[in-house]
Length: 306
Length: 223
View 1 (cartoon, chains in turn yellow, cyan):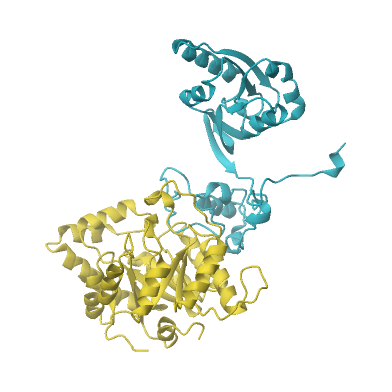
View 2 (cartoon, helix red, strand yellow):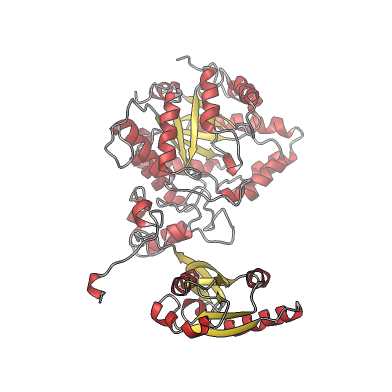
């Protein structure tokens, strides 16, 4: 065991893992974090805490993760390379580990021009793959990046990263995954999947390279709330592909929210059958209260206890 | 070459407000090529400034000149007499030229008339695009001759992010994703294997301006 996290234990036992996402508040409202976390307790194995997602200033991922640890919940700390250089990131990884955080997700992060600090200077000292390499070095070689200073203590971190099978160029997407695996990633959470044929094609390429035996892939899903949301995402969010028939189904639905949940449950069941998919990552954006129902209806409950 | 754009006239006028006589000096190198600071622009800007000041009731006398290369002391020396005769200098060379003037004429205020923007290529007449950030350790041999440091908004070194779609960057849908272009180019020249190569953390500290101003010393050329 590399980090002895609940998530690692479940994946190593070849059990189907379930993770969800929690967006911290735009302020110091501890109650808001606790309320969202309570809604997920017992229904998922670990909770991703986003790091200023879409470049909107929020409570830091590390602080919100520490609040989850205090509630005896297991966080996956997301860390983007947009805002911090390698000094700050490695320092925060020391701190996160000291606070009991055992999983992290290495990302480059949404560009600041999408958020509420458009005049910010971005950092990108490292990219996401270099960050994976950095954390792996800290954990396995017990030194900081490029140095021989021995780390005081053990950085036990289960290392995650994202993959987007819907970005272009498509043939490169599996190569990018291979680079992440070579850099030392332990688990992958994918971009939300609506285009099942393309995802299956990507998974086939993953298996052809034998990558499914080297990394745990958690398939990402996001329940659609309305036809408008489906249309908006398809049109405005780069790297997301939503087939026309799904948009159509959502637009025509009498109860769109219920339709979205039903669709999500069916997607999870379909994803579970794909060889190499070891879990599901439910990104219910500001819909944390529906995660339990999705997990229940998809047959993912009860969750194994550690 | 270095690209620049003229500053707004009101901003320039605000610098010149205290003065009655200035030297406006351009540069016949890079900034002349991008029509921001050459001889022609010196004439046009001088006319604009004179007219604006005349209108405001406080006339401005402008001596015009244009250096061959304002980043070289021997050409800047030629301005000596003219500088002695004015209260301030307005330079429409790049930021390098402004500083060479300021260093040479230590007792005279020197103001910039352009914003120096980037090092780039002329895509077509009137269109210039950034191509190099002078990071100090060229990776173009790994990336098919297209630079991700200068051309990727996230300066990613290991391939396109998830936002690359149909060849375009997620940031601006009319800007090509340089990593898609790198991919296509490597494919065309039979070097697609380079996309699999891990490029480790860059040494920004020793290679870029992050360690302060860089310098080159060539003993073989020194007098």
